Length: 409
Image (cartoon, rainbow, N blue to C red):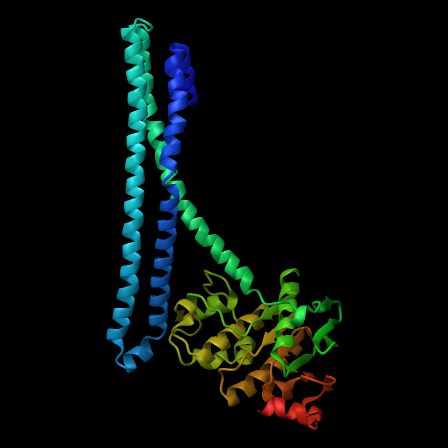
């Protein structure tokens, strides 16, 4: 465009000025409806996302839906959200088409103005025929870049709508981050040295703070009556874990995240796991060995998106196996077996304690009120809603009524 403008200014200054003035004005006119295209694109993406979420929900609840004869309801529900997405897509396409048409029209008008100005100047004798031929050739050359500029305006408008969706998603993620401490209290201090993980100044309400130290080679359970201090400490530990080197500290949340692939790839976290080994000790300690006996192909059994073809207890066992396979220096678990039966839970608690003790003595910290894990723990930290915290063996703490009520209710 710059080269063409310079050529036209040399060939005929008036025609060159027309190009330099008319092209930016034309692009401005084309850009004016861009906001409506961006809005429609944003609405289309939202409608498509709703349809996707609806399909995912229905697929995960397919067994229940079929058992209750709800296929017709499910089809109608998805058809409604799908039609909304289709309507939004048509609206976006219609606005985009209008914008493209406007761009073609405006740029054609600009080129027509250039040709008319050049023709009038030829008639008035202010331009030679050779100059006119050169201007005509350059005008024809300008057709493609001017059309491309008009298309870029439309593409930018659509991209702006998609960018708004991404920004909204990132903001929602930031807003969903748990607070680091209840009642705006300062976050606890987490330190890892050669012998232990130490938690200092953990605010648990009523201007009370608790210090927790877990030596390497030991398993410590934390029981809280109030969930707020527990969430605050988990948030602080997660933040600290993100700043440590790989393998030093792992915080495994209560929410299980599985990915499409195989049981092996979900444990090893290697996309093309192939024959990646998973030790029998890890499978036994996590209770995943029982799962392998119930599915086809064992470790190479295919897992659907989000683990939809596994039960809640099976998903928890795979996630626990993943955490144990990683074998971090410090392992933090949050209610790892809530969907597992009591017998399996007791076996997992015992196996986990033995495995972690045999693997170089890493520190293990578990947030749970499960009697099986509490009995297997080397020490238990009990934080009541009011009063001082208690530290000791599970059997010893049972003498305290508040603790006994917290772990047996």
